[in-house]
Image (tube, rainbow, N blue to C red; front, side, top):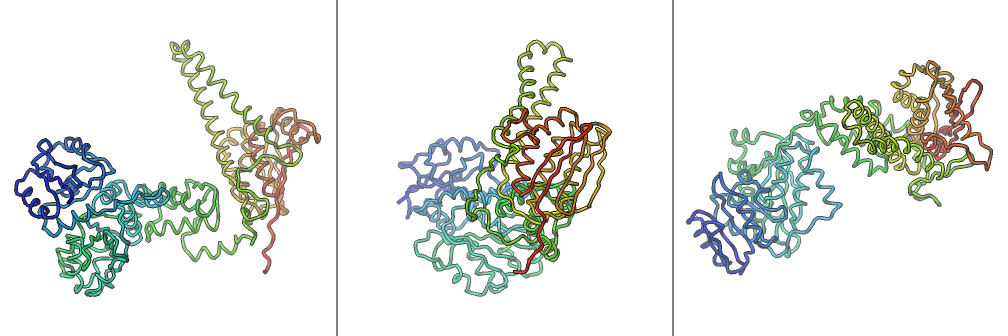
Length: 611
């Protein structure tokens, strides 16, 4: 017989529990913690907290001396207790609010004293299910209620429109509860009289609980089944087995209105709604959509083997203003289609595919060639990219040399600021100036490291037909503000478009890096001439500051085997690596009057051939 400690200020409650449980367990009674005395460590603590105000910390301190694997059964409603204030998260907690019947009490105690402890969830599975009970999948307030639903074993009612994630949340609650029985999904309208027990019969006789029953659209439960369902929900027991079963249900209708019309038993509506979990429609959660898009994109990018995805402000605005008739389910489908067909590094508004019919048009235009996956190709590696290239000189020494060069100047600024800190603190003007310089230096280093992290995430290219001119225009748009400050206008010459066979994200990064390496050294009021040819070639012709032009020319035009006098700008190093990895070439030529011509040639997209 296992020991049970009962603490409740009511003598009637204490004596009733002794009578009901005394034939099966050693029951010790006390009106308060300071008078509690149990001959043996209790395997279960039954606690009835007095009405507020009360000192829950005293109960917490007393529970510290009880074995951590001893469950706690509270004779209070979940809404009346702050579980975090009462005990540590590791303890199993259940609720049985007063008044209760003897049958329910025995069943709840039998379940809590079952021999098998709740298993520790695997890390990967826990991370998957945690997404469905936390923000942003749930609003912050609803997520707090969901955490209570994990800690307690009472019926939960999900109310909201279809697509708001009730089934996914229910699976997560079942997972984190450590329930050993199955998770059974039933459509309430298809329930038949006396069929509920057969559907829920345990698969083995070794089960210690009957699992979780999830009823979809519970307001549609046939009248002939409602009494049987009420018996299961009220006693938490599986008929004919004595095993406890937890009821989770969903509804997209107003249960009170159903009760008023006589379509639903009032007791059943009350029992099923013990712990209500309202799920608001997505159109009422506009402020949460950017965070939702980020989390959904990160999960899908991993499954699709994509680089990290970002969204332009215009794309997020379009997603935020849409009414989302299908709620969270529709949002996940739209993002999934967008990433699967476009595979973008940065999502623009025109990339978003809201309706399945539009995916057919996009899919036929952007279908990839049937080639072996890079991981299956002989000699291919998915490891971090190397920096070695053909002659002309990109190797690891070049990259490290330029990285040291880029970090040295801001580090000197920060070091100087630190060395003279004592002497400049008394001069507010000097202190403000040095502080600004140090802040700029740190920002510069932070941006540099972020760029390197983005570059390091690239793997073997996934090539698709891509419009070269569109990629260049996107890269120019990101530098439009700096070009405007230097009064540099962009002049387009040659063909307006050219389709090349490249990894869109990698080449966009390369173009953006090329412009980053140039834009700050362009001669003001001189044009930036752009030419795109139908053969997959891009030409940028600029007038750069003399030192920049000489540095680039030295880097590219050096004689074979002769080390470069200076390393190229780091953005050029990164751009060259990605361009060559995609089968292209990068050339830099210096001409008269400090004119620098940068030419990028990429493989043209092949026409789709019939298999």
